[in-house]
Image 1 (spheres, helix red, strand yellow):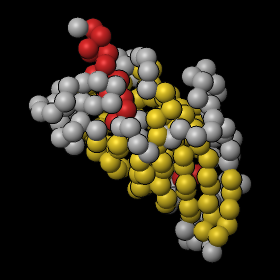
Image 2 (cartoon, helix red, strand yellow):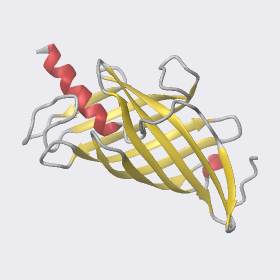
Image 3 (cartoon, rainbow, N blue to C red):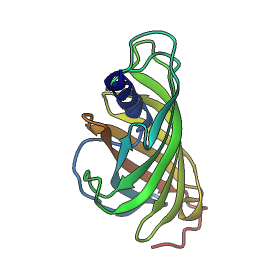
Length: 189
């Protein structure tokens, strides 16, 4: 029974971790100025541990059961996950992803996700708000809908993808593609 709950939590974690794509494990910042838009592109890794940083709040009502990749339709999941510079959980902590997901696909593979990512990077500090649909086993793009601090007025999107879906802690790669409009005054370099 405990293993079944762990599998359910892992599945929910997949939904919740709308912030992570499996490619490289490096933490690169790229600043660009293109047609008047300042931009910033980098990747981080989100680590979600069942019943420690992510929890099923309400179990869904229909569809597949809880597994590492599925949760029943209507499942409500909440998370507050550390974000690091590499896929290794013990690498430098530079942010926290906190939010909620609701399983929206009858197949148990898709969830509506809402998250706030608070970042403390070398030259940027603040939060980014994200909304979108997360697919549990495929890369997912999520629009950035707001920001605070150095990310005030930021626009863009993040792409999340699973890196490691085995065990109690699952890892996602989150790729950030951020743009500041010309009217936004951004004082960080």
